[in-house]
Image (cartoon, rainbow, N blue to C red; front, side):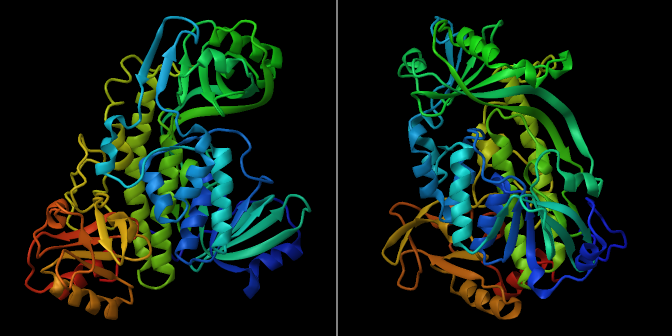
Length: 568
């Protein structure tokens, strides 16, 4: 439940003058913004993009001077790419990722030049089976290439994004959040008053710490140093093997090799053991070069070290995702092993889930109680996903990871189900079995409430588009050729709730709005009869379904929307 009318103030302090304190407690009208985003990495930038698409004015602050320069966080799963597709950014992202467009699979080898080599999997989507589930596909786009695209898209939508700016302090009350910001280049401080704050400020989130929100889970798993380097000769050793990553298992020099351009630029993740007293200073250029040569099996290769960055793999999930008007998203809410790229994708999907709910509350169509569903939906997904990420690291023998005995099992199977088929048994949904598993054993995108709505191709107004393209800025009611009564019900609901609810009749009749492709059955795909209807949320998840004819569609729809929007 969202706690409003809080008597306790949450404060994050850095010293500021009495004049600045007075300004903080009496912000001017120009300092007001509906949403303040703290953190400008993948999750914060995605939150800005999604809010911008919904017309929600916001301010993003990021303490670093620019977007990421290190090639990391490269795997963007199909669900994330669906979100970017609907937000109008997918094509730009694929253009930025074109260099690695033909890289697929994970290779495990003792060295690149020896005989002990095995593909853990060779294709992300063997046989092209993903097309029946989605209009999108996986995309290998490194963080340093993806973030600039998101930044440009967000600014084009009017987002106010400020780099070299950090959150110095914040206080919240029943009406909003007052934050003091510091320009790290000039030292100047300013104050902003926001209705809500999104903390996308990383795994060591100062906001989460000040809110006193604890974490659950095993904790630290392993540590690596990510080394960027130039080695043109390495392309000869790699040959035509276009992998996403290669786990090199030489016990004297293990690590993970990742291509940047398949030619001269590479990344190597070397195990780091701070528990044994190792420091970052121990990773000299000479040590890194020697390690890379031995791991790859190319002893005389010319290597130029261009950068080093430590990173930590952990499995933790925040005990709460919200405190009053402050919400955690991304790594501030959950940490996951990097194997499978689940962490960044889960965070981006957090931002998407939260964006439409904030928009609905801010525009008055929903009660603030709707925001309680953010934690109810996203926290269980993080718990299940983080466990599977750790299991996948065990299955792949990720360098530096020594799992507990028996860890791993067969969980790496069904990765697509984890990425795309997860469910919301609780939250802003009606008619869901509360015992529904968050991650089912099999992919079941059949139009059931709590699941991502099915994908099917539709034709109308001279264009071909997916059903998923319909879901972004409002609730959508889908019905069949015999669904005129649902169109009437939607009109009545719009008048009552000022919701902007859109209704589409799907079929080949003269009154239908959209036609399915030949041979496709809309009702069968969505688990209804032609007289039924499916209500889909702005994030593409099914909120409710009428499987057949309803005696009073308008009354039924009114009751459902009242429950979903917490206006009953």
